[in-house]
Length: 492
Image (cartoon, rainbow, N blue to C red; front, side):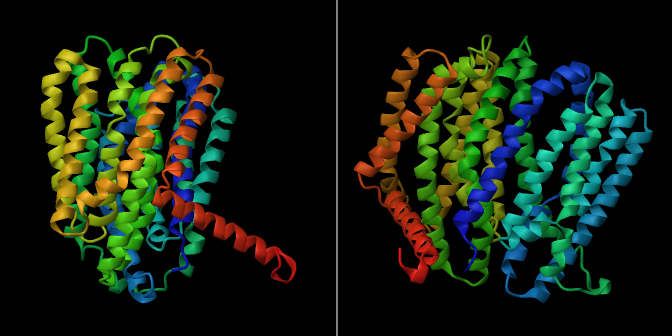
């Protein structure tokens, strides 16, 4: 296959990091310009429309990406599936929009004009065909589109949002840019699909599969908000939720570096599954786990070691409790990465989402149960510990399933990670000692990050880690080939 997993991963990861970094640039300005009340109006109306968006999308994103990947080399069947999913989303969007209009006209709607503008997000659902390009492993087009619209988004916010009265303008920019971004890739669609008569469209043909994929989505959404709701219920101050949310954001940004691989590997495994190539699937799973060890381990160890210096430099005074929360919550990194490999990269592409659903639901139950015990006594610290335990349970269940299917050997996987853990622990000790004695400045934070990375990767090089050496040789070979092609007569 000509499509590069590494290139697609880099493109997707870069965009995901951009998505999470943009708020860091815009939030201070928007918070001061709109004020707490304006932000609250947007947040409330967006939370309402998000429920309708979730219902309109259902499980179509995972289903469509998987199904399109099955038929990468069959334009007719691929086109049938495209129009099936597109028409299904059109129907669900119309239904959800109708119910949303009833809500707008009711007495339950507090802020009618901003809520009306939020409908742009619902319209954007029907226009979204990014799943077609993901299934075809054509990530460049959607990443370029999303990057440009994000940057335009930031420009318009600074240009047009000038006072607390601009809540509607702010809402319109965010929703409008989402819709514009979704519409911008439609000119490329005819290159990937052919015309299928409307009478042959079957929007409800696979509704059961779509709904089954919707269940883990709901569970994950509930999982992500229940801990904050419980902190709010038991804490006398909103600050506890603030500490927890800021900690979660930082860890999720770092985690995105690892989990971005899932979006680009899933279509490849879906196609291998369609071809019944079990050896190919095993090979990709092994490499994905090696990738988790290579980056997930140092990210987790680094976050634990950097916390004492990172928190005062990044947040300033008043956020000291995050220095306790971050080392605890950082332990989810490896567990979530493992769940991503098994669930997103393997189970969903191979139509075994019921196993993934069971693991997610079990994790949610463990999380709620432990929250009920820990949050009343330890507040945000208890919520962080409960999240780590819940993610560990889910990851263990998924690994056990792969082992029973004989797709991985857990003993071999653990042996593959030994060098990474040695390097990670050495990095953690070095960074922790440095950060405890260093001045609390941005320069020292950069030195700590660079030094920690040097210790980790230097250790792997000294130990001749096979996966790292393989990738270094591959990069070197590509650079050498590129140089040779550019040289006259092929001479370097």
